Every structure is written in C-alpha cells, then in structure tokens.
Length: 65
Image (cartoon, rainbow, N blue to C red; front, top):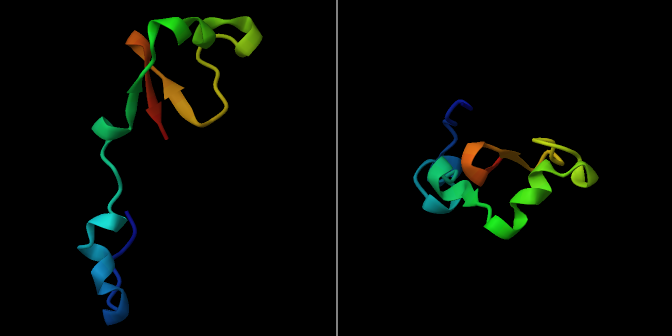
C-alpha cells in the first residue's frame, strides 16, 4: 500500500469515497451460461487464458484485475 501523504493539499484523497478502490465483491462478475464455452474454447485462447483484463475462476466467475 502506498504511504499516506502529509501534504495538506492532498489530505482529502484519504477520506473521499470517489478515490477508494472497489472491493473484490463488487468487481466480481458472473459469466452467463451462454458464454461459459468461450473460457474453454481453443478458438478463444484455451482454458483460463485471457487478455490480462480478468481472471477466470471456478464456477464461471470472472474477477477483474
């Protein structure tokens, strides 16, 4: 985690909700049954291989990184 700044101009960054990182629960997306084959298809890169935008896990959920 980055060190907290002591500069008074940026003190609001520590408490303003607009600058908080989203928790893992809100960034997890469930893949619809219609699209689960894409995760395992060789045409789309094989099982578990993505484009670095997310990570497929058991049960068809996608966690955004």
